[in-house]
Image 1: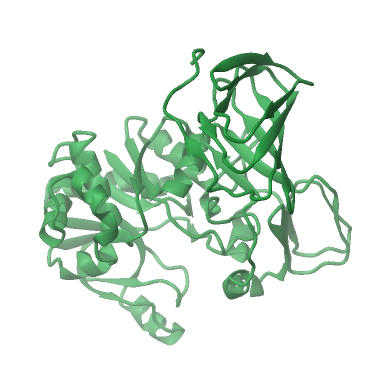
Image 2 (image 1 turned 45 degrees about the vertical axis):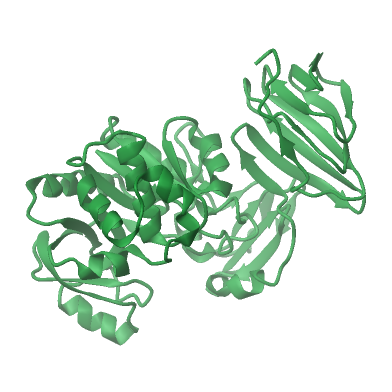
Amino acid sequence: MNIILLSGGSGKRLWPLSNNVRSKQFLKLFRKQDGGYESMVQRVYRQIMAVDEKTEVTIATSHSQSSSIRNQLGDKVSICVEPCRRDTFPAMALATAFLADERHVSRDECVIVCPVDPYVEDTYFQALKQLEQLVEEGNANLVLMGIEPSYPADKYGYIIPAEKASVSKVLEFKEKPNVEKAKEYLQQGALWNAGVFAFKLGYLLDKAHELIDFTDYRDLFGKFETVKKISFDYAVVENEPSIEVLRYIGGWRDVGTWNMMAEVMTDQTLGEVILDETCVNTNVVNELNIPLLCMGTKDLIIAASGDGILVADKERSGYMKPYVDKIETDIRFAEKSWGTYTVLDAQPGSQTVKISLHAGSRLSYHAHQFRDEVWTVVKGRGCTVIDDMEQEVRPGDTVSIAAGCVHTLIADTEMDVIETQIGEEISSTDKRVFERQAKKV
């Protein structure tokens, strides 16, 4: 079975922990059996593998999120990078072309597309195996998963089945209704549209060629920004007469807001947090290296990171996006394929950053035109390379890098390095990457 996980999102609904490169699916808020924490994408991948360890997983995502995926999942998954955001149909067309042309998946193989960020029970992924069976039976061109509603929601689209059986033909689709209309849909046996689609690879590949002029994956990648923005529902689903829906009865939550996230978080508090005995229904996540004390708080979400601090009533937290849109700050934390990057201090003319590298990883071989840098090693051992000159480094060593010098850092063990950037212009765009690698690599 091939699963395509759609990983998008601007990261503003779970501010200040999430941002444009660190969306909600990468936040490590769920406790594992070993006492550590995992993110939503790690949880979903683990659940998929628990059902069928032979499943091939491809994540369709933006370039800005690919580093976070590599950081959290390593090389366990394939990544299909979208050059820009063009909605779900172009994303799925690119991903299926990637499977066909780069991964050499057969046209007759089943492909299942689903979001990367639902909070679900393992039975959800067992239901994906049922979708695969239905696709192989070939009674419909497209098979969807519909969620048995637990209440008349006004924030989901609805699938109206022909009957209330576990598998049914689809009569029609309904946009997000008001609550009263949703109650009517539920009486008809309607299901929430979870955005889960199953089909044979060849089916969607043919649809992609029918609606987009391209020859193969690389051609589509090159012209991706010219492709019309349109959802898969509008482009394909609503025009397909042969559709079945599988009714899923089990735990399913769309944790798109802090209020919803609080309902599924394993712990009431994360980080250095103290709640006094009068706090009621309060969830706190503190990523700062300072204590956070709450007294007498009721029905609150409190989240603190280097990007900002949120104090919100739980119900109001779902309406924060327009206010977060007004906040203009540079991203202060990002996950990279090699580790993490945390801004400790920023002011005119200088910036101080903590770089944490995984053992065996390295930075790109690069140079900056407008700033000097000073690296101070505080943990671990490794090697710096500056203009082809290699030097072993260990805790306490300091390395100066002048503007224009090509440099990299290679970690033999896990490393923490404090980087001080000095210059009149300090920008993430001031970086030129070189293909040539150090001799040690």
